[in-house]
Length: 282
Image 1 (cartoon, rainbow, N blue to C red):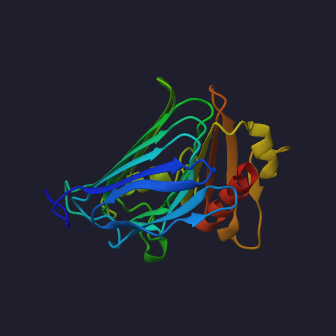
Image 2 (image 1 turned 180 degrees about the vertical axis):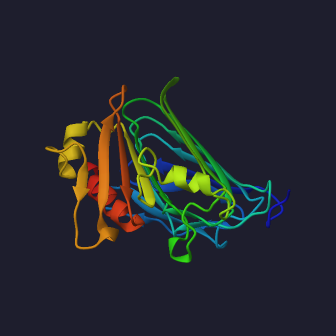
């Protein structure tokens, strides 16, 4: 099965730090549909980068590979240009993404792709492997999944969505999460949709988000306070409309790192909560 570009799409980037303490892109390579904008320099010497694509989304047969290296003392924040659309595919077709991120000592990476929207009958698999030199390597990973094109009546009508992430500090595996969801396949398997709507999965919500923090030397109580969670088990933000409701919770891992999970009726509500945390740890 070949993709629309006839080859694997590659995005490779290396960020380095100058003697003056400013981060710069020392090497980059990308093939269609990827490209990058000129980085924005921040006052603290870090840089912000938009990763762009000429494709409207993920199609059947697409294979994407990311390789990002953050060298010692470099600090980079990278964000995609728009929500990621995963288009309808035929039986046994698949879109794939493989991400490899490496952070050297005293480096920092905020990896914040915008939310993903799997269309009806789409199939997508992503695998991220992250390698941190030690506890001085600071890494933030943001992931938000929309239940589908909800306004088109496609809630949980995708076929398959899988997002696996593994994080190692030195040689030790410190975090592994495998989000594996099977949807109704365009309504052909309605029991799958009912399962995803169950209290033990999405609990009636339509959007799910994860924010992972490694090496920031913050504990769960500090993050919970930022979100107003200090006196509650779950944070339920009540608003005038149902679309603005949100529940979230914070977990501290065995390695002392942080995992934040959120459920809501819109991606924007999750993004706003995550932005509060990101502003706190910067």
